[in-house]
Image (cartoon, rainbow, N blue to C red; front, top):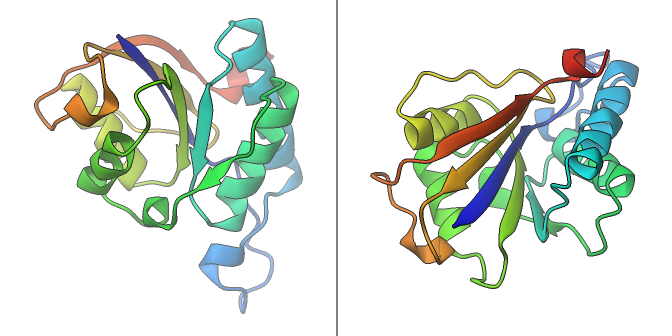
Length: 163
């Protein structure tokens, strides 16, 4: 069994209309929520073996803040395909993960990350900003993950749960 943690980036700012979407930073609420997600991972004993994040600034910062709060010991891997990637792209990214990784955290964007989660669960799921899904997968190696694989939702966390 593998555990997949799926985290949508936290709330970002849109203050500068000339700023490229890829470069949008987290706003203050987003910074707090990213830290809360990391504390949830730590407190629930769900520290990932590997974190893979979209290259977009808001996703990278979400991953960094969560990683720091849960005492994640490694470097965060960046995956350009997760930025604006659709559901099938997420499968491709996950299938490349080393089999020694038991618990993987993906940090990405809507609509792709919600589409990916919905397909994994055979349910219509919408990931809110900083929403975190904990999905158990009936596979031994990440390369076994296919569009027919069905996971089991163990937990769903969002920032409002910390209040």
